Image (cartoon, rainbow, N blue to C red; front, side):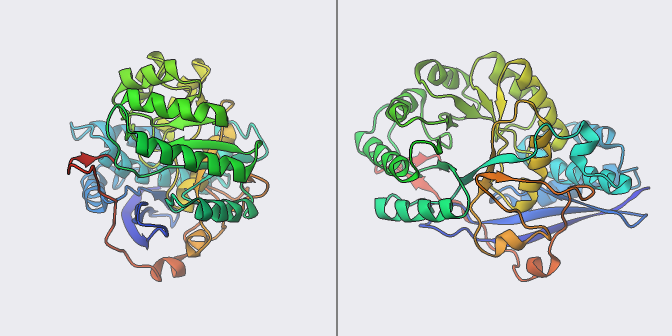
Length: 387
């Protein structure tokens, strides 16, 4: 079997809300072979479509004519043979191809991918919902949207507030964050899981203040309190806040995860299979985390394709914690032929070969590429903030 073509597909997927969430294109990657087996991957990287498409074009020459079942070999080629190993842009392009190769392998053997890697450790995967609030700060809206998500089967919730904060201390915005957190906890009750995504917006001192606000509300984890490369800051927050720290979605290579763990930056790592050069790197990072008694909660607020692929990883990990999923109650849930169903906070995988899904081509055609949008935040003095 030989690879004959790499086919990128863009699908426009605007995100509903109050303008504080990103609107993106789903970037799918199909790898075609001379035996008619086609693999599916995803390389969605918000607002960087052209960069990822260019990287795909660059690495395509490394895999054409190769046997797609030599996954680790081809991944090493894509990472090493153009000298520059790259970062998240190249890591996303490589992931799109690598994931499609796993799909081909599973289909060629008539088995789901998770069964090729030792089989499932569990019968179903716990899932939390992200993006459900639309970014709103209004307590009435927050309550209504939380109730909608609960009715859709979720019992674990993550939220994020895109506020342009001042460093070190910002009393006004701290009050807004606390009010939103209290509203959510009151609405979902004491037994539902609650998590907060800092999006790397905060310095360590401000993050510690925020974490202290959350402690009485029983948070499961505080995600990206600082930028991922600020390992000293992450370790400082972890040492001063009585909430587990989670991070890792922006990392692409195994040594980056090693530093997080050896420097005690996080109790939960969050590899993104669509950014970190694919399934293989995420699996290696998860095994590494297991040696540190750390847990894995894969990042995945993109399309149902990357969620489904992540579930194959979740199924085989002893140290799996919970899977992220973007709240989808519209056509985006139908972009795959086997739409995912959340029941009592869990998702179950099917036993079809490969990833067990295909793209719904008709739905994809109905939603052409859009101009991506990522919110741009500024403080009152005009200074640029992280979104």
